[in-house]
Length: 64
Image (cartoon, rainbow, N blue to C red):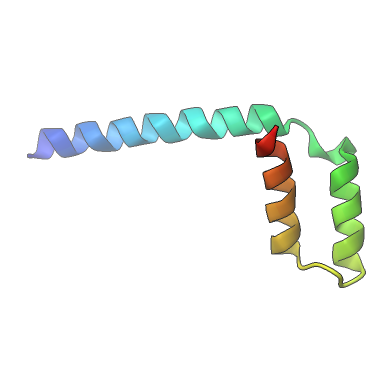
């Protein structure tokens, strides 16, 4: 019923919050990250689109 739906939404929100917090902790400050600079150069040169660059950056951060 309604209570079960609320409980499920609350649990999903809690899991999402924990996951996002963990990702932010792993990412840290990307401004000094050499990978960001390299990817930005490739985007500026038209070698890579920004979405693909972001995917590469996220994959590199979450793989470690």
